[in-house]
Structure formats: structure tokens, C-alpha cells
Length: 79
Image (cartoon, rainbow, N blue to C red; front, side, top):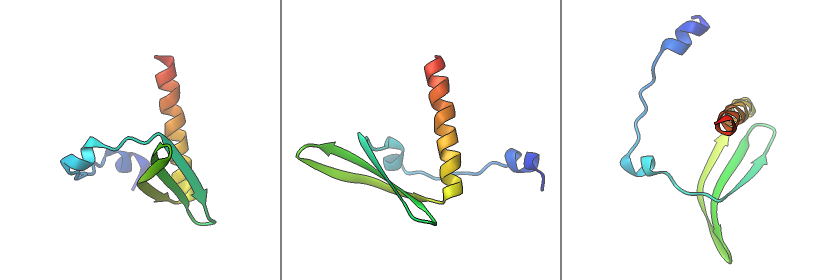
């Protein structure tokens, strides 16, 4: 399968209305091991806070996420 074939395939993603609303986070904590990165998204309002979501990804996926974030931030700043 060529790279072009991979890019032309569409994947159907299911999401509930509740998930589509999203969750606000004003803090993120990153930890890592040799095999994975752990991203904790938090809402912190002193003196308390709560964990909204934990996302665990491989190092190679983390690199792609960082590149996508940098690209989107550059586009945002250009506007």
C-alpha cells in the first residue's frame, strides 16, 4: 500500500455529544517512561484541582503530536 493510498482512506470516528462538548483544562502535566508519554489535563483553581483526562501515547506518536501542535500554532500566529 502506498502512502497516497493511506492518505485517501477515511476513518469513521464515533463520538457522543458529551465527548464533543470537550473539557476545559488550564494546566497540563507531562511524564514519560522508556515506552510512553503520559499527558494529564487538569483544571486547577487553588486550593483544589481535578484531573480531566489522561492520555497515554507512544514516543513516535508524541513526536507527531508536537509537530502538529507547532504547525497549528504557527498558522494561528500568522493570522
